[in-house]
Image (cartoon, rainbow, N blue to C red; front, side, top):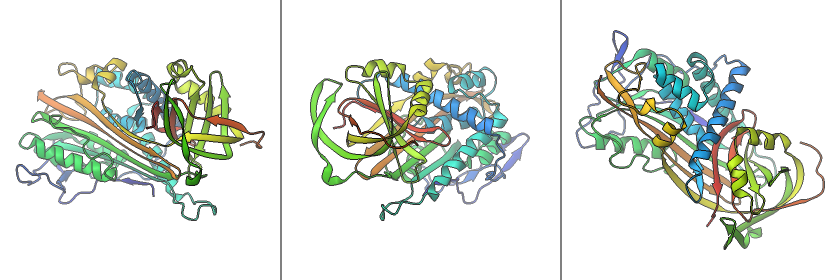
Amino acid sequence: MVSFRCSLFAGAALLALGASVGCGSTGSPKGTSSTEPAMARSNLERDLSPDVPAGDQTALAQGNAAFAFDLYSALAERDGNLFFSPYSISAALAMTYAGARGETESEMATTLHFTLPQEQLHPAFNQLDLTLESRSEAEPPPSLPDGQPPQLNIANSLWGQEDYSFEAPFLDTLALNYGAGLRLVDFAGDSEGARVTINDWVSRETEARIPELLAPGTITTDTRLVLTNAIYFLANWLSPFEPEATQPGTFYVDGATEATVDMMHQTENFDYAAGDGYQAVALPYVGSDLSMLLLVPDAGRFAEVEANVDAELMGTVVGSLESRNVQLAMPKWKFDASFMLGQTLQALGMPSAFSPSAADFSGMTTAEQLWISEVIHQAYISVDEAGTEAAAATAVVMVGMAMPTEPVDIVTLDIDRPFLFVIRDAPTGAVLFAGRVTDPR
């Protein structure tokens, strides 16, 4: 089922110190990780019925899609398979953005395509999460007696240095719109124990698909705050592939080298489009709101199509989809990916956030100057005859220093060459995952 799991806590303390919130001790022994850290948070509960104008929802969806493909283009410079969750990255950075001020806030807004003011942006994120939560209500069709509704679990959490002051309005924003409390850990005295604690939380929230988001050395005694988002997705195809129809077939790795892979086959009515240099097909999951959209460049044109992929092109593709009887062959695939996004985000336009001298996160704390040391992302995907399992997690590590139409004739689509794909929520336009497959082995 779809669930947005708010941060639960035991023995939470909220101490008002002027305009800041003081975080008390966890009581965790040194050298160990606490499975249930103490927490400090606003006394506000998450708003489960935000009043968000339709125009704000549209602006958020368009901005998130624009950032998704900006980031895709930047990450596509690496070789091989590619997979990430732009939604997870946007959500983690949106929580960070809540504490940004001045030039840092302006640069983040431009880079992340946040066109709404802060007081409208965060409720819009909340509304989007609640809308995605409703996907759990989808009923499998009678043709799928063993089918399950999509499982889309999204969780946010903050990890702050104990005995440290964070601004009350910052915690209010995250509690009200992200359901996120502040878990208290001791980065200064036990950075390794804090790292293990955060990794354990991420692993639980992603069904152990992201077992170690934070590698040794990423958390230090200078760490003050880590903002995390985790997303887990498991869904059956609305029209599953028959396992008996899966056969060895040829896939042209990098568009040229022949490789033998497991190819799935079926002929079914799918939304299909063909454009200049590509074909596209959308494979719906149970409930039909969520689907995988595959963009398959023509032979020899992968680099050309990929270089032009952006939110506008994907909007054109989605707008031109129409129901066709498609004879489809596509590979099974499974892989994971990891990224250190700091340099990429700076190159996209938000260097101040990573600068010890220029970063302004005074909306988080006035105890000292904080800046982002790294944005870390991992993702996992597995696609087979039954459906898709995908998971991703993002950590923003902050350190401080003092201061349908009727079916027509059959079209054939053999996905035997590199292709791009996104997993998206059709009604909202949210791009949950994006990637490419150059070698499905």
